[in-house]
Amino acid sequence: MYRIGLGYDIHQLTTGRDLIIGGVKITHEKGLLGHSDADVLIHAIIDGMLGALALTDIGTLFPDTDKKYKDADSTVLLGKVYEKIRQKGYTINNIDSNIIAQEPKMMPYIPKMKEVLCKILEMKHEDLSIKAKTNEKMDAVGQKLAIEAHSVVLLKKV
Ligand SMILES: [Zn+2]
Image: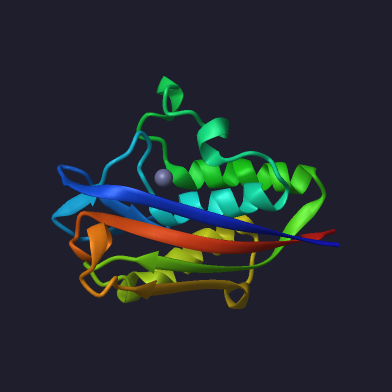
């Protein structure tokens, strides 16, 4: 049996923050604003995983009113959500995702992101797709005010 989930996230870019996407620190003069480390890709993947089993969403599970999640490492949150999925008897069949950023270039960091995420999610590299594109200078993302991410997650009953 298979279950599919859709995830989306967006964070504002701001000075004085590290840019962390897919569990990887990216060299850039700005970072993403958020209660946790604001890892937009991991948040989109978490919401895809939770959505596949109708287990609410990241904001419900890890509320930004909870001090425990201040500057939280999103790879840790991802591990917790993966554990939830496993407890329900599911594993991940495959994930497809998009990072949408006008800058910086994501491509050089994608192999490392795959390494980090595949390890946490016990997946093969060929089952995790991370694609990157710009927003053709349009809207908040295109004007370098924000970075967004989308994911589709397919779970498989073990
Ligand atoms: Zn987020």
